[in-house]
Image (cartoon, rainbow, N blue to C red):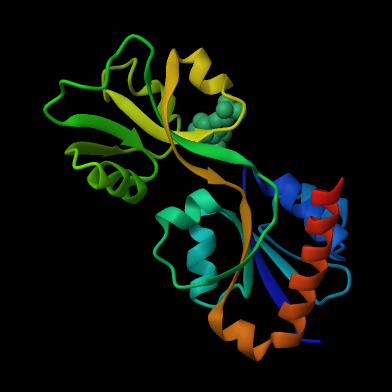
Length: 213
Ligand code: PRP
């Protein structure tokens, strides 16, 4: 079977993604995983894993540097990459929400200032409601922006809700539910059909088992 390169989103998804891939038959030593290497081979030599920022996973996959990727739906909603999304992996469950300080009503603004890592999703969301907003693009720690006066509200991910709560924010609206997806490069899907098909089948089986328990 052909070799596959898989791009894995670093950060919140990484541990769960590696666990899932290990159950699908990829075997990477813990020494390799605990190293700072950003590209490692599995023991069979058939898989190479690359660890990149979540927002870069669709880029590596679209350009064919990685055949496949594991990344959150939140990132894919923001991305314009032309890639296949054959499988929801059931890990990394979270919600993308509009959140605001508890005491602040979200009406009466001429243009709401919204801080986010997701400018396209935010523009689409408020645009579809006919609201004009000023989008302030940040790279992280978005929840701190309202209390510092940078923004009136935020669009960000919520998992447990702790970060919102501890920063005096409440959910105003849920924009989307998100879980991790397996994504595939269009050419790899054709040219490496056997290996890609094998990976999809192995992962689907594990996801199905998880849904039944
Ligand atoms: C994510 C997200 C929220 C937080 C939500 O941040 O952007 O800040 O986790 O989790 P919670 O609801 O369980 O508190 P991440 O840790 O990915 O870092 P970031 O600040 O770079 O976005």
